[in-house]
Length: 271
Length: 333
Image (spheres, rainbow over the protein chains, first blue to last red):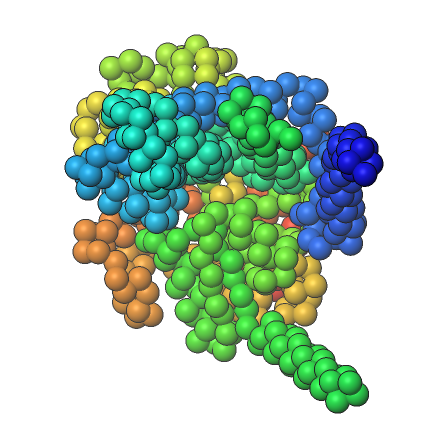
């Protein structure tokens, strides 16, 4: 009897990887079908057309290929990514440090929380033109725009993650006579890391919004310049290709970050 | 179950009726009102246009003006059918998208002023190998600077794009930019704030439309009478202002336009029109084939138009029917 149960359990365990692989294949197939449906709907809408200025999906892909081949797309990304990377890295370092400090110390929380809560609720697009009055029209203004969008979400996520650490784990640490540093390093930060990472992902996403707003509202450079220029000269397929490319790039960056998070810090999620 | 189906049927019918009513209301709205999409905000510089609109209203044309953030957005409103008439120069839109729209009245000529910081540059030759700032890629300001570079045989090291004359004027004053091009209001501002520090470079041979009225060809045919009245009033107002720029202040009061204009800007109103008239900004006859051919050359240089400018046909971009009818009424000048 026991041997039969063991056989069944063993068979089930052996079948699990196959099932997971099948499930992953199904999920991928559904996702690809969803993308294909979206592209088909776009092509259809362009062929009707819903608006004379709305290009078909294939025209947009062709325009993207053209801009990739002549190097304009890569040059635009090189320009756009500079303030974006600087802004996101600064927001990541300052944001996580400030958020953790706010979660750990009441005095820091009182000073910092209201500022970041207001900033998160504020329509930041309205503030970006004001940035030019203080920081001019150069790289600094664009980095500040990225930080304005990315920082509040990173700070508040880190702060809430630390403030809501499981109290049982803290109690356990105290029972084992763990000091404050050990509490922070061994309990608080590991327990808060999933929410901190979620904040970083949201921060990067907000950073993309910030840089495109800055490139459209401050000075048209990089991808913002491609969008503005092609709209001005009525090259709508190129304009849509530029917009679609930054959306896809942003989505791929976030997916990559999630993969890095799961691979390096969340082994339990890999199963 | 059958009750549910009947209930659903009634809801569906009510929905269809509501949609049909909405559609009819939309159609009625379109037929009764002339919707104008203006790609800028109402300022002293748009008073000539607003006076003409006020006069067209007096003659029974129900005009509604919507102000948009930019000319591109305003042109999309016309292409999409939300507006009947647009203001701008949609050459690229007509050529590349083959939108069935035509320009029909030239309201103003392009006038910008190249300004340099005299500490570094004195004339066009000094700009050889130097950096300049213009509004945007493909803009009129870039085309002017390129045209002047061609004429003087110079080449800029780099062209920066800084949208907004007021932003470029600020950058000139702060010293971030040493050579740029701005509109007349900001040229005056720069000269007043830093007397002697800046110089306006001479600019000759730049003839291009800044603002023209355009509409869907179907609308122009359907509402020919209303369009003709508007063009007549634009012609009459332009000629009055050309004869006496000071009349703008009187007409503004008469029609109650820009009621919340600050007092300091009120003082700039007549000088602006005096200067514009002297610079021949407002064409007396609302446009001509020759002016359109000048536009072809200029906007091809700006990157808005493709192909050989000499091979482009005026009738593919403009219709002169409303203007000819209006000129026949008010007389040629």
